[in-house]
Image (cartoon, rainbow, N blue to C red):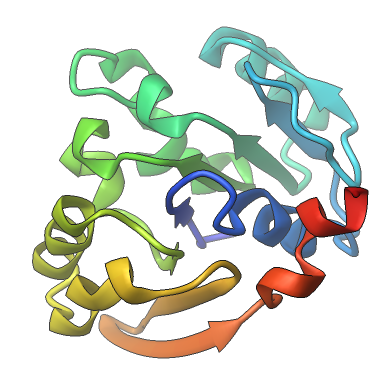
Length: 180
């Protein structure tokens, strides 16, 4: 697996819904780090540290898996170099990392810049500008204008990045409005 995914946006913009959408039909085991406790459509194991993840990967014996890391900006700061391998070398362990975060500025650039896919939901102006510069996609600077459920998808294939805009859900059919 050579994909590395970042999902970013403000609270309740659609980040967890997107992660659930990506993992729900996967044939691979899903390992999740979630310090907050979101509602996941599936989870085969939980982990807290990169060492616990290494233990789960060892049990996989090279078989593919998906690793979801919620609150990723807290896990991949510049000072936490011991976690960066998940994004920079995780593909060598047949792992697809999916990182969910609010504030990409707190995330180490070496992690942020390695993403093959970026799902950018409504974001603050500063975050949108950082992403526009990091991905050389000026359109991302408009992410602060997206509404709940709308997102930009940046995909890198063979060194070329493309940007498309999508709607995962509308505010009236959001997962949060379904709970009421």
